[in-house]
Amino acid sequence: MKHRILSVIPARAGSKRLPHKNIKPFNGLPLIQWTIKEAINSDYISEVFVSTNCKLTAELSTSMGAKVPYLRSEYLSSDEAKSVDVVIDVLNYYESLGEFFDFVMLLLQLTLALTQTLLR
Image 1 (cartoon, rainbow, N blue to C red):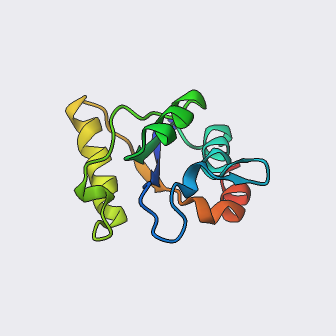
Image 2 (tube, one colour; image 1 turned 90 degrees about the vertical axis):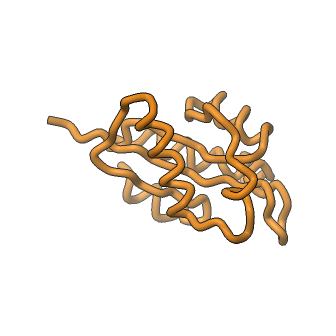
């Protein structure tokens, strides 16, 4: 039996040092595109969910095959919000649909070097 694994990619638009960093080019592609691509190509991940408060990031993410059914709340987009709160928000969304996963993997874009090695 294959496990259902959900990948959650947090992509807040409110970076203080580099606004909209998720859609800024990195080596020819938007930063978030690298992470989504690796998650979608993974042999283990069943579904890729991007949690964002940015319409541009949401559009780019969905065009690549990630799920972005809603924009993240103002609180979850604040400096005070924790990654675990974002994951709980996403899990609550899936629970409301009657969908459940065996495992959840939080993927941060700055861990790209690790994701390329570990996700295949």
